[in-house]
Length: 347
Image 1 (tube, helix red, strand yellow):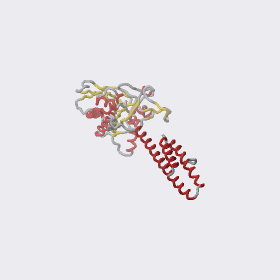
Image 2 (image 1 turned 90 degrees about the vertical axis):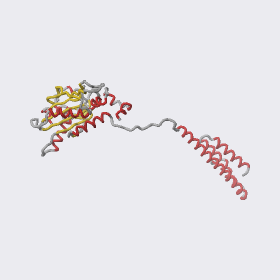
Image 3 (image 1 turned 180 degrees about the horizontal axis):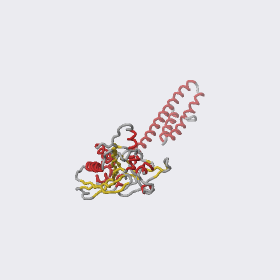
Image 4 (image 1 turned 135 degrees about the horizontal axis):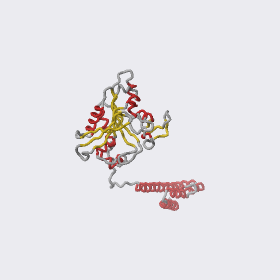
């Protein structure tokens, strides 16, 4: 290779070496291998040479061109490696930091309570029913013997939505799971049409909604409605069933129950149910856990049954309240704040 070609190759290597980016490298390449590059101009000049000289000169130019292309490829690889190194440094992981452990999940404490309630009542022969959370006024109030002026219907107690039923009254977010009494009874009667109908024995756990929020109340809370209806079901059965439930739920026979006279539109007579632990931190205090009573004849009639023939009891309790008592929690809002430090205790 002649001195001028060696000088061109050296110049190309120096230019390529100074290129800091791929764009700079392409600009340097154009100076030597582009349409007007130095090697290209030399190739164009071969036409004016004699045949033998053209062969010799052409071979030398080709060697120079190959050397420049090799230098270009080498520099391209170097720039690509440098770019990758920068990227790797930017995305590097500090393996000395502690890893993020994925903790095993678990059921929410209220879900644990709901499951426990369902299992206990299922062992007593109760079905578990589920119903809509968006309810009609008739199912939420009228069918349950609530008069038109009952305070529960007011906007201060019940959430209403911009959807109206056939009666022109807006639907509501159910304030209790009691509508399932009538819904289940209708389905039960239809199921056994033309046959001897067995007793209605069912619980209906689920979410409910009321305009309320403090340490012991939440706008969204849970309720479990219970119903036992038959031809020979008495208030005595209610006391036996609920006493057995409470002692099983709290895993203690060392507690007493008290039925206080009360008033609910859908039962007559009605009673509040209180429990008293005989030992432990809550010993000696009467704690309200449920409302109950004998199903009102008007409600039985709205179920499509004859109140002269069918009689029974209903009760409504708060699984959230039972969860607080079972685990010793004094603020209901802790269950729904989503604080993993609190919830992992029940895992």
